[in-house]
Length: 234
Image 1 (cartoon, rainbow, N blue to C red):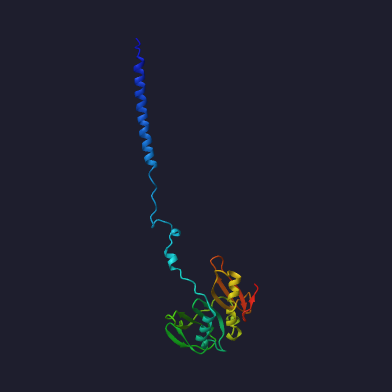
Image 2: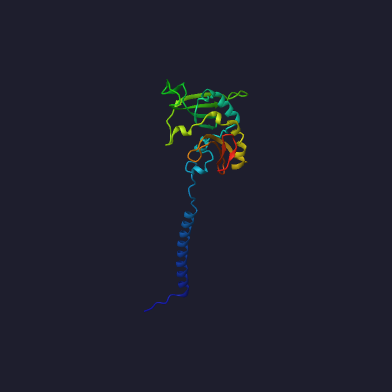
């Protein structure tokens, strides 16, 4: 026997079911929104990438470039003139920053080797002597110091004699006058003279030439000059 449910009762039951459904749906939406509102953790300064740190240890260790100057070269040559005699034969002269290094065959003077001074016959050993400068007090000239000579080993497979030259073969002052030309050729706005190397660039050239290196934040480069400071085409 089928019992008929009054229409009013049916409406009441239907409304109750819809209320329960709406309540469950509201709880679900509330939980979902609370999960979405959680922020991702922000990296701490220690977790940030090194590139984003303005005061990273690497940047703090970088020192500003000290340009090679004509005045520095003159002071260096004056300090090392005892090693630049007519009997001296040079393998390489290198000026970088506040250091001038000369690799030369040892004449009859003592060299520093393992804190002992040993007289050596002329022309049989290769030594290096350095002139370095430190800033003087305010208003005072820089303080220069000579290091060496120190015995060094020959590098490369060529014959030492073929690479040597005399100091009177080159004009170091004229080479330094080509510094502005090097800057103009590489970067006239932000370029800086990084170093000058004077030697025979065998096997590419048998003649002595100076190579002027320019450092640039965009693209570094170099030019060559002959023994008298005239720029050369490569």
